[in-house]
Each structure stands twice: as structure tokens, then as C-alpha cells.
Length: 146
Image (cartoon, rainbow, N blue to C red):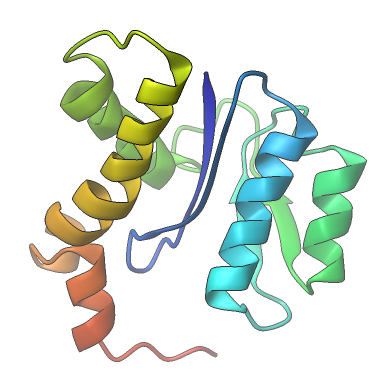
């Protein structure tokens, strides 16, 4: 199972995600599409990814650019570029994936969905957000888009 997540760096909210049995361009493009539909980001919004071949694919890059987004990839080996998403994956590993085994891919996909949409976005409090959940933060914070 492969999972791609699009995370809003300001609120730490998962705004797009996709689960599939292989790490294809469709996997990351579907997650990006969900994020675009959920957020309707203004033109010029920067999306940052790692150097995975899926993120450099024609399909992903075209989807991003047609939506007015600016794709960004950091330097190789720079631990600060992906710190927020790496922290997310680390928490998901410890809080969910390391706790048990699942009998089927469908069962795992359902558990991941619940973790992303319910636990992470609506229940898990984040130190970077003043110990609010992403949903609470977005409902109370004044966010200015430059």
C-alpha cells in the first residue's frame, strides 16, 4: 500500500490524499486533485514535494501548473525541506501503522482514511498550532494570503 498526503503547512491539515497499490503518477496526481478541490488555492501557491519520480512526472506537473500552482522541489539531502511532512509520516507510523497488522488492503485503507480525516485533522492536537487540532486552528486563526 502506498499513501500520498497533501498537507497544508500553515494549519497542518491533510487537504488531499490518495491510497493505491503502487507508487504511480496517478497516486500523487489524485492527492493533488483532492487538495485543489478542497482548497481552491490562488494562482502562485507553492506546492513542495520530494524528488520522487511521481512528483516529477508529466501528469503531476501539468495538473499543478494548469491549476496555477508552482511546483517546488528542495535540494537533495536537505532535511529541512520536508520536515513538516516527515514529522507527519513519523507520527502516523507510531500512532497507527506500528500498532498492528491488517488482514486486507481494504481494511488498511479504511483505517488510514479514518486516521487522516478524523484523528489527524479533528482530534490530534499539534504543538505548532498552540495545541489545537488543524480544524480548530483553521476555524479560529486569522490567516492572511499575500
